[in-house]
Image (cartoon, rainbow, N blue to C red; front, side):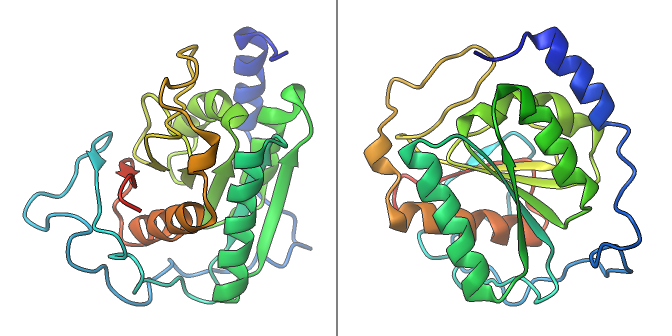
Length: 223
């Protein structure tokens, strides 16, 4: 059972006080602003009409394939839950990090009471990007992320109902969980979390973040 919203709100206030890593953390040194390697392909977005925050856009399949993160890109995988779709997403993130030669760190929330503390632990690492996998994290993220606008988040396989500009999501008809008591989408289908779609979700989402297209929802029904 999830803790009451009042308890989550209190934990979110604690999360807002996080100041960073200790000197012994090898991510604590100076770090330049990440620069993408490669460019977005035609059809990712309409260059004449850049999507506004909270907008949903449908990129052309594969238009993100030419984009890669720099080798020093710092990413934390934040995950909760042991259901099949979450496992698929976690595997996709780890496979992407391996393929890109990145040093990926993982924070796993052990239960409902550890969701916001898990986000806090991820924030404390000061990564370039936090990638979230697991529907249980949606509501806690909705409360914490507005307090950390300098930190970029990517939610794969779900989305926040009212994201701030630092929260990008990749979703599709078979996923589309939005939290806030809205329940599971009527089109939810665990079988839609295929290896191919989960991999595409990670790559498309990271490509958008690296190119400053944040706070939007990428819709991947055509993958």
